[in-house]
Length: 96
Image (cartoon, rainbow, N blue to C red; front, side, top):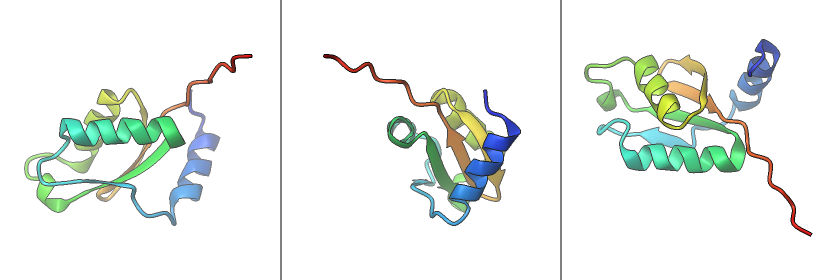
């Protein structure tokens, strides 16, 4: 579960960062979803931006929530066309 304090910390850390994924005019394609889930496995937090051409009929929040649902992650924030996703990293078992 994400606490409000965690959300504030994540927003503060990523506010100056540039988006690592851009959602193009085709929208949330399987390739985009795979790339976001791969980045979530590495970093836990992903910042993505949606191009205006991808928002023909939908709002940015609905596209972001759809991607969050497909990647089993939590939607932290939607600000304009940019959104933050968080997925807790699985702990790796070290073998001896």
